[in-house]
Image (cartoon, rainbow, N blue to C red; front, side, top):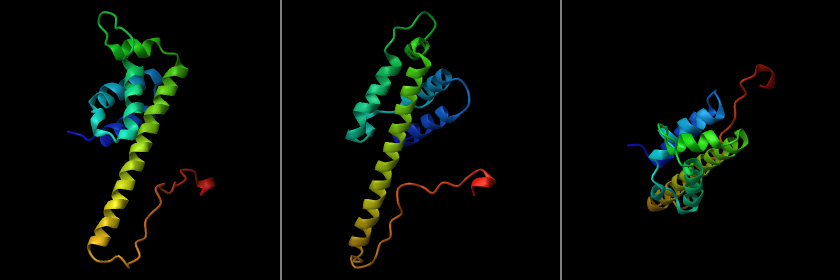
Length: 137
């Protein structure tokens, strides 16, 4: 069983792959977003997650298809791009929440161990980007 964070990561990775946006969006929903329980998300993210879910399941399916396929089929590429961006933003927000939670645990642990006077150096939440191109290095 995967956590909501892992499923959002999987959805973001599905969207980052090559191929038509509508196929990637359908894959992200079926294989990842459909498995997320909104109650496992932080309160601040639940409404946006439900909005993404609703945006991907609002159409009535034809025979032989599901609501996701029907909805994505009727979307323009721009609408699919917008929903995909929302999914990536959800993953980024969840990653920030996880980082903040981990930082609080580190600080709480340092305080509990009596090292309140010790300096705790925290890393910034944004990872360092390494250029893939030799000319930019």
